[in-house]
Image (spheres, rainbow, N blue to C red):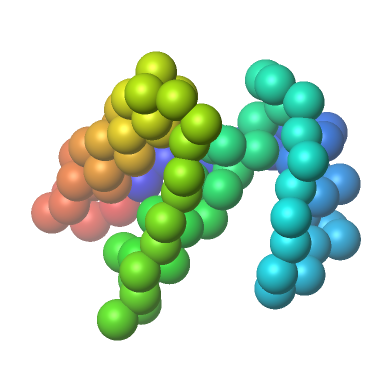
Amino acid sequence: MVNLVFNPIQTMYWMEKTKREIILKPRQSGFSTLTIARFFECIVNEENVTAVIIAHDSDSTLKIFQAVQLMYEAAGSEEGTGE
């Protein structure tokens, strides 16, 4: 599995996050990637977890889905390697 390296905005958010948040964000700040990674980690490592991310249009939905697929493939590439 590849570790997510935070950018400065993600680091600030991570240090101050709570359990429930509404994030009003600018584009390209990395919050979608951080949220996808956070949800993916919970889904993979915990039982009975459901996560939902809602996008505002079909292009954004596709980009989010592709990011999830990339994380899934990266997680699977380490299986059985002992790493």
